[in-house]
Length: 161
Image (cartoon, rainbow, N blue to C red; front, side, top):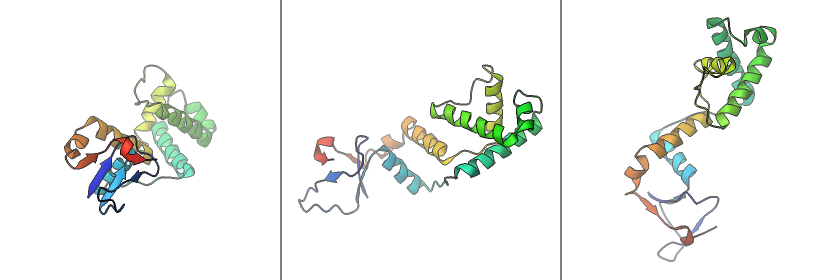
């Protein structure tokens, strides 16, 4: 398999075949996400996207386990009053913080953050977080450098949008 890779590619990319026929057998054109998808496929990494209501149920379960293990925390009174509502608000906070690449560090900053960090131990990761970790791993490690001998990089002017 031949891979034409560039982080600038997006959407449909037209590539002229070298032989002029326009046919490129066993060749794929990939951007960064496409390369990640290809690596996940070849490495056998699999994950499932959960619907929001199932994510909330999993997070509620994680909060229940945390509250049982740590009954005296700043969120316990709210959780006793409205467990599902509190879990929903906490999940929204978590998603907001994950959106800005929070690394679940900083328990000393706020008691609420300490609770979110504690709940995280019981909560399973989402597919987007697994994908984000995979992308970080690919960027930070030598995977791409090891594959460069197999990748054919073309400049964006040889591809038309």
